[in-house]
Length: 224
Image (cartoon, rainbow, N blue to C red; front, top):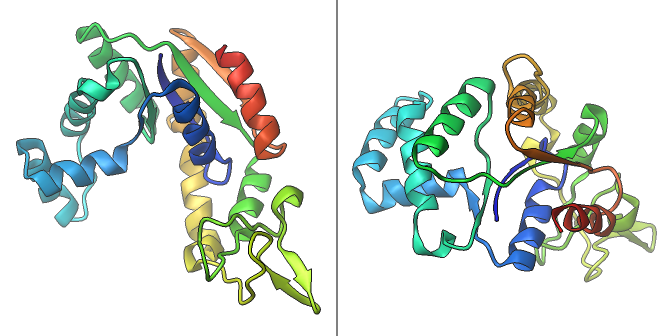
């Protein structure tokens, strides 16, 4: 099963991707990891990508897409893959689709986790980090994972540690709005890419507003 997964920052896309990975035993492939691996290994594509990154420029699609395809051809992807983080816009979707067709590589599903821009922003700004373990989920705006209260103070809902903190970038409204501006753009942005795929493959839309359990149950039911 070959899947592309989309969702705005704050939608729980990474969490749901991990659940799909476990359920179907397919690798959850993030494009950022592909870049880092190629640069670390010193591949030809990695060297070309690094030159753009070092200049602060975006890596062109004619470097990014071959890098992704090489990863999708690795042995662990033989039974399927879940690609996360690409394409980010309409032009990349068109180029990715063409590349997949040229490689005779099937795309089975596109998963779109839907969430309103306002709720997505609140979820990002509501994240709180546990000082003991950053993987302990705490979010002041999500009832299912709200931090606990002890002696009038907010503490980790998992281990009870206090001094919960927020990441600086999670409170940067300008940066959040910029990322969301790209994602929610239906003309040339990420949602335009999702709409492009709707004419070509089965797109599974999943409401990301309930809790993690409810979202994953809906997603796995639709994947079958």
